[in-house]
Amino acid sequence: MIIALKVEAPIACFRQSRAREYAETYPVPPPSTVYGMLLSMVGEMNRYHHCGTRLAIAMLSHPVQSRVIRTFRRFKKKEISDPVNARPDYQELLTDIRFCLCVTSGDDTAQPSLQERLQTAFAHPETIDRFGGLCLGESRDLVNAVTLLPQTYQGESLQWLLKDEDGLLTLPYWVDHVGSRGTRWLRYSLKAVSEQWPPPDLAWTEIQAG
Image (cartoon, rainbow, N blue to C red; front, side, top):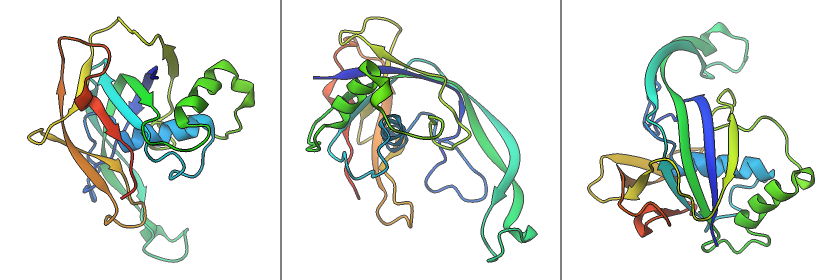
């Protein structure tokens, strides 16, 4: 059983794991970011709770990259108001982000599974207990819409994010927010496939803790 969603966000930065002062962005939403958005949708605060969930991502748009200068906060001094903690720096942004997202339980043993909780969120949104805006990454990067798609979706042209040992995209599927030791990456290619549906086997990424 697969649940398929269309996600639209006007602007976002998917900051690269190895970026330092200059905040570079991945060109597509990483599986780890998408998983975090799904947890937020159903009000789940424990990101380990639905490990084993499998995701497949297909881009519907070609996001345009731009660069802005903004204030970043890095806590060099204990006093949060100390000016040394704030400094301007460059950040890359993507605009017009639209993608198709497929979710299946995989080895998610939670009851109910994330897939089932997402289905409930659309069927009975009044039962979901959550807080804050739905974001794709940073709290600033609000999602415009999440639309439930039919399981045999035939619509816009899809470019699937496919696992590929020789791919040029290295994306995290699990992020260690304390250090980098537990972060896990996979290599991908973005490709259009002849049969757009169901998602090809190489499109599926299993969410597992590092």
